[in-house]
Length: 362
Image (tube, rainbow, N blue to C red; front, side, top):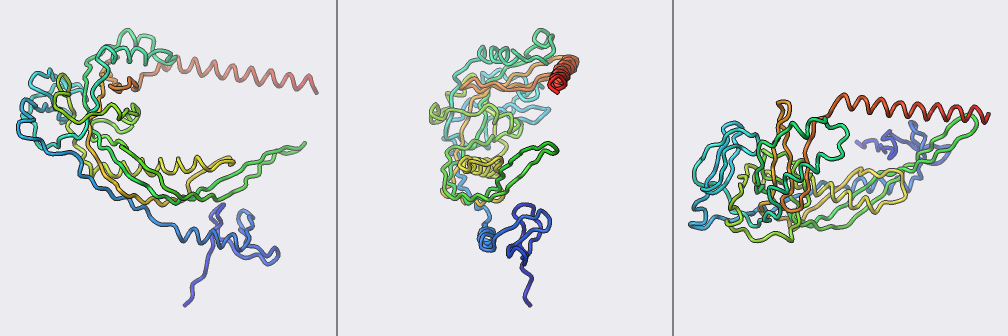
């Protein structure tokens, strides 16, 4: 038994049918008309859409050699369960993630040896200066925050990252619009035209980083990117001296979903940058096929600063290589409403002045 063939309107998604009067395909919902050949080509493109193929070779990291971990110990936080790697001389008396006391957990075990490390380039004083610079120019920051908040602890930590390489072949269809506006003596008009744009090609990715620690938010770590991999060296335990190293608790396989998301989004954005001349460009469908996917394991340098103000803890992070500084700040609600009221007052004054000008002209 034959089934009914139904075409979807590319503009609004409604079912369209052949209109005998215009001899075209027409959408009864948005009144958009299509030539039959154009719609047939669009339908062929829809049928050619393929699912993503995102597979990886995740043999990252190596096994530790005999004697290489001598003197390396783990510290365990009783509150958040975080495991931090240091040496016998590391003064790890509190957790850099939650600020609570940590206890020595024993010798290092059950973790891969990193492939690479980016050594710290900036010291503790640079981290303190970064915090002061971060506070400058914040109009809605409580005035007493700079004076009354105090740094509880600054810790230099090597954060585990999985670095993903891949070649991506992509077929992406974008839904684009062009908006034209005009007015007459009675009405304002807005005309929106819809288009489909297709892009196909390949793009290579190297060392897409994914944070291997669940104790550090992905968005926080991504906010201090990028790290300059030209400063990376083959891993040696000597680089850990005087610092802590977060022990990964998210392995390479568990990080694949985040890597796929970052690569797919970056591919769509890169291809979209070639679609020009439109008011809006949005990916409508995409098929990304990965080849030569592999992962490596690296440690990246991060300064973590915990401060306390009004009984609340604030955590800041600084890229230990570039100095990029991020972190949330408290807001002075009184200052916010004063600023909001001033902005509204200025806006009202501008509208009033414009109205008076129009009145004088008329």
